[in-house]
Image 1: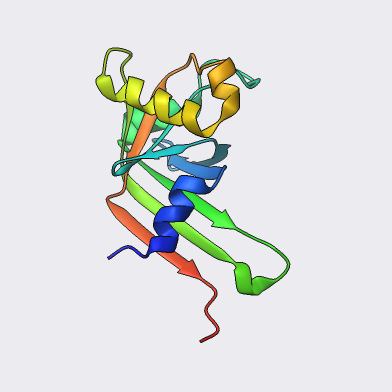
Image 2 (image 1 turned 180 degrees about the vertical axis):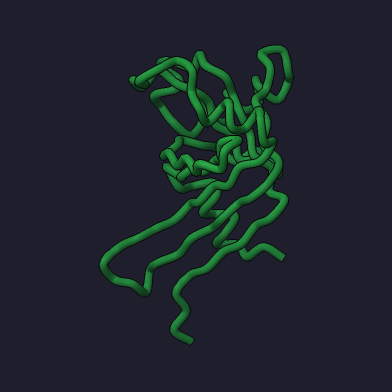
Length: 139
């Protein structure tokens, strides 16, 4: 059973780290805005500046079909530390997939910036096939 704090963290935290792996085993790690929809973490390529339009994270997802997400919280008082890690099947959604519209709606509900300027790039999602968590517990 997933603890209530984990569910809250997946819905409330503003940034996560997406890890993908290239066909040669190179690990790529990037911060992402995300929303949680049913049993998937969803994200999209948005208008923030990128070096290139051909994002390797999307290539990696398409090639491997998997990704890992880390959602975490840090502060100097270590009694407040926690992390949640999601590993699972990952996919880049097509524009006509109903899950794309659902993901964009969830992202806009979480980030005001996306109501002003919705993401125009590809939408992708990661299933919660493996969910692990930790938080400081002094008890």
